[in-house]
Image 1 (tube, rainbow, N blue to C red):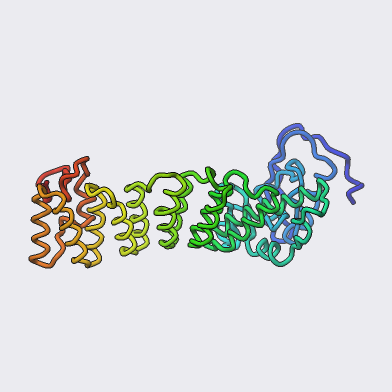
Image 2 (image 1 turned 120 degrees about the vertical axis):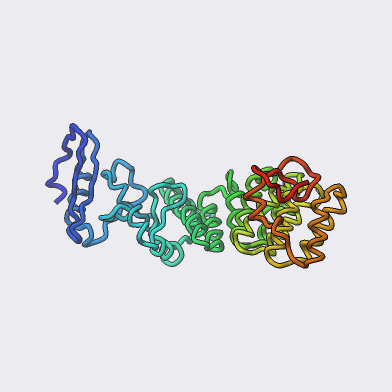
Length: 373
């Protein structure tokens, strides 16, 4: 009985306490700091020693840190509760796909199926979002706990490639946190919409008057890259080609279009890569890297007419580039793509110079020089 426990006992030095979980026999290692243990702390330790792995043991998320009696490494979030486990949560998450550590929140591990069920099937939020219903400080604190739980789950849904559910959790979280337009709201929402490929929602979000000045260039570029990574190329084009110029007053850089093309190429989508590479050349006919990326990608996927057209355009604008003219003539004559223009060779043997006068113009580290200006 808890009443039989002392009010507190002093702990003069840090103590390494081992508790054997009666349900499995696993050893739970707790590092208790010096100070004292209160009656409630002793009661918790007694419950763990009697019930762990036999019956579930929970803490509310409202419990202060010093009342957790150093169990944090063994806690797993289930909704707005912490469940105490006999295995370290990070270790368990590495082996159990139902557990997931929140990105950039070391040690915060969620039981995803359980929390998912609690958030969408068990918890009832009626009245919590209505302004005309009075909420005392305790109720408001509880509401914020729902919000923070939903925010964490939105990150988990996002990393588990469930962008629609991530956006739903994110929006509900913002409504509970009473300020849906806090700093970072638009950047986070944009990331989720980009991953989902929802171009209409992207347009709607960035058309809000409140969004002006709150979405930096870095957030737009990050969202476009995420869309490309998720193979949502239409969304990437909208973000890089329309929304970024509209928000910043500046076009996407040619280097950024190449980055998008590289992402598409990593996805094994060379057609999308060609589209991005070609956009790096708009307004800059001297951008050699963009041409080389475009030519080599077209050649690798057997699109010789495209490769010939790109090199023809280059030679037209750079008549002094005799090497490119020779390669163009060779392609037309043999109907084969030259090895000199394959990216594996270009990337391995050449470093690019700041010279726009040669399509294949690069300086190899050693001779002989297979492609020269």
